[in-house]
Length: 456
Image (cartoon, rainbow, N blue to C red; front, side, top):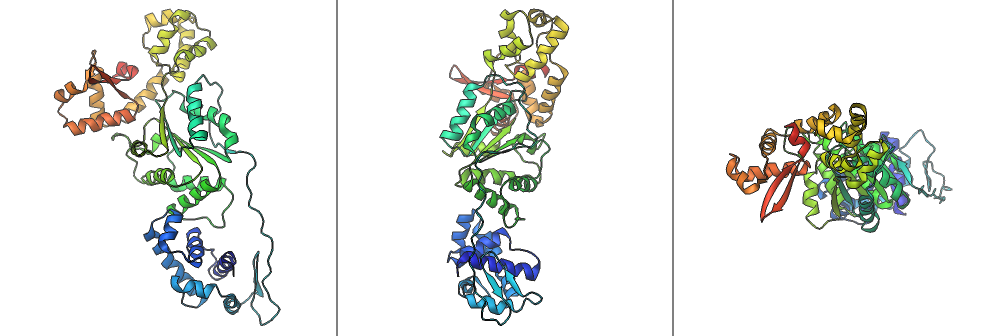
């Protein structure tokens, strides 16, 4: 009997006896065992641990032994379950039904000799012919400025290089989400599925995976275990060309700790990211965050198909924002853009203030209100500062009080932190995009965000 036929028969018999179908993992183990594969083979193909497969296999054989009334082990499964006559005998135990009908076969449960296997044509699996966009609560792009170089880089990484994971990083308001929305429009013909989800409210990985799996064609079973859900999603990532965009990833990390430490109960996101990075498939994941996950730092250094892109100033393109708001004194626009770091959100908010308080005159604003921050900008920056650990805040305060460049070597002598601890703090602030290290005169200087410096 064909393995697929046996699999359907067993699944139907288990359903009738227990009221539940075989799980995704159970079906995988049964099918592979009937094909003569070892637990080690099954583990590699399923991207699960061999121990997990062994435990699930033991549960499966006990279940089948109870349901079918015969002792079944991995060694005996192929011989017993591959025998077509076995099912006619087993079928008699399922009283209350004349026969069990499946797509490909009928199992007779009476003594008639006319029963036979009848092959039918299975329904073809649905395969999208155009991109399936499932963008959830993704904001619309009412205004998008420039970023052509970044768009081209991301398109090359996704379409040309087929990277598995891209970390899109930057401080709040710099335009990460807007860039991703524009990117979708540019590359969507190359994908079967494009899915956007915000992690702002920190859904558990289990909840997120359930949502993601519901987007794809329905599987025969909905797996319950996290490992099984990840495995099934990766199978979809192999079958289809998918792009998954996860926004606000920094919300998964603990506040008041060094960056990249997952909240309690969210540690399995790290496993999820690593599995997508190391397993073979044809899909891509974009992580949008104000903090760089530590696992991305490690994966990038191991010559894996993982990259990061940190968004910086819009540069001269930001003049389009000031022009749209009909600001005056164009000769001082570059200064205004530099003061607000070419951040599109900050410039939008500040341009409105210049209209309201300075009659659109940029020169007057720069003279009377240098580095003035609207409440909405201050709130966002304060929110970032509140996430810092105590020692990160201490280091930021020290750097903010210095007018001259701060050299790393001198800092080691000024602070009471052990050198290794200081480097960890600096690393954490770098991953938060709040601190930059630059070489100068064969030494390293530390630079903090100028607007944060003005607030501290």
